[in-house]
Each structure stands twice: as C-alpha cells, then as structure tokens.
Image (cartoon, rainbow, N blue to C red; front, side, top):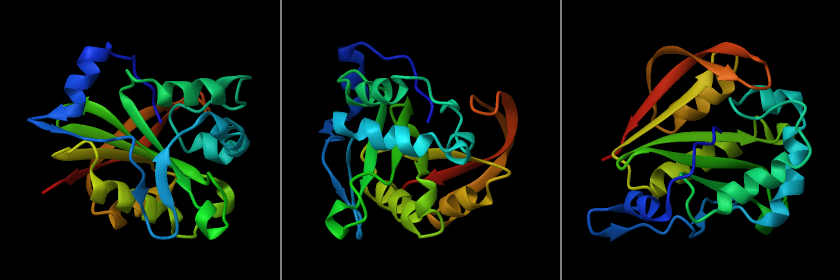
Length: 196
C-alpha cells in the first residue's frame, strides 16, 4: 500500500469528482460477512499488530519490517486526511464476531479515471476467502468511478494473484517493485481490470 504525496484540497476534490458526479468514498461498503469502512484512529493498534508479522509486511511494497514506532498511527492519519490521494477501507467483521479490522483494501488515484488497488489481510485470516470478498466488493462498488483498475502481486505470493483473478483482473505482464520490508526489488505480476 504505497503512500503518495498529498495533493492540495482543491485538486483532491477535483479528483473525487468525475463529470458531475461526486462519489462518497467515506461511505461503508457492504460485503457479505463484513463491511468495508473508512479507517478510524482506533484501528492503529490492530494495524500495528497485523503488520508486525514479517510475512504480511513482505507481501506489500510500503510496509517496513520491523514497523517503526508511530508508523501505524501515521498511516491512519494519512488515510483520514481530507486531502489524501489513497482511500483505505478496513475489512470490519465485527458484525459476524471476527473482529473490527482483519486487513485493509485501498484505491490510489493514478488519474481521474484510473486507480490502483492494494490490499493486505492479517495472516490468521489467510485462505478464508475474506481477501477475495473484500476486493470483489470494492471493485463492485467502484467508489472512484474508475474506468480502469490496476493491481500487482509479488510473484512469490500466488495467493494474492488468485485474489485478483477471482475479482476479474487480467494478467498484464511482469514487472518489478521495491519492497521496503525486503529492502529489495521483487518480481511482480501486473493486473488490469477494465470497468464497464
């Protein structure tokens, strides 16, 4: 989940508006066993807990390992900022008794009609279908009203690639991305989802 430089408020509002339609990226998104909701300050502790697992951090580009003090709080603050370029939703399954944050899904604006999707889920919830359901729900809601979504998965993480293909993403090609936790460039598979 890479963090981009924050834009000025007026430019961000322009990016949130496509044509004459304003999209409420702060509204919860129902997703069956859970809801996708914007992050709140109280999420920092669970984010810190899950991302302190090396396997979770190494599955992302931007999460360092070990996680520096205050990093989870700074991440939540950026996700809640009005001038953010990345919208982040908690996978909140408190309604079904699984916990109020199991992982996150995000959309980062690349251009007004293109966004990059990212996600991670706590290792205790791997292979449960929750990541697939979260990504499918976010794609279906399409809160950025994107015409194109991009995503990537590290080639040593076929589970994440399967989540993307289950959500209708098509393989686009091979690339490399820097992983902060690994302190190295890692081969990736790049995916594309054209929205209709």
